[in-house]
Length: 226
Ligand SMILES: *Cc1c(COP(=O)(O)O)cnc(C)c1O
Image (tube, rainbow, N blue to C red; front, top):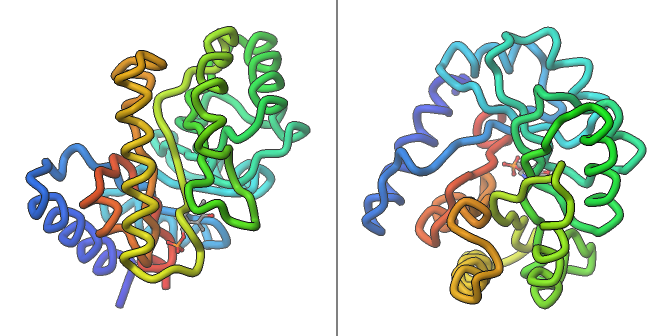
């Protein structure tokens, strides 16, 4: 199977999952995760109509993005070290992994220096995973409230990885938790529709479940690149 065929298949499955839950497929964005993938393969995905790519290492992103068409959109999806922020620029469309206060502060100061407002998602550890990627559910409200004091960081939703090893129904529960968290925050007025617009959840193994549970962005690598 080649990249183009794989992308078509993923898009069909996203559409079907959306239809099962009365959602519009056009409201679900595919981020093609291109970490560890060659330029050649990324170009195949681009030629197949994809423009949104996800990278988890800043160094790798730096090497790649300048060699690919200028209208590609880049998503930073992995844990972001504060000493790497200085390498980011306006080519970054969305940082999915805002997961701690120190990162919020540093993004804000670098953003002020370069006059860039960073679009971000707050990463949540819904599965309470040992690996501890993201904020705990209980921490999200205060974090979002304090983020309002940092004008160079703009939050537009939540992200989760779910659990790395889980059965499908367990995974569905984690995605549902993220959606319920978002709905509660909206109800409490912690954020508005723009600030809580996105739910970035679902990877190769579980994106259809994620779409059924309300994902607006899915991040897919291995299903596309093998
Ligand atoms: C690698 C990665 C993905 C894509 O995972 P696949 O299983 O290859 O689809 C999505 N999100 C994050 C944060 C990742 O690191």
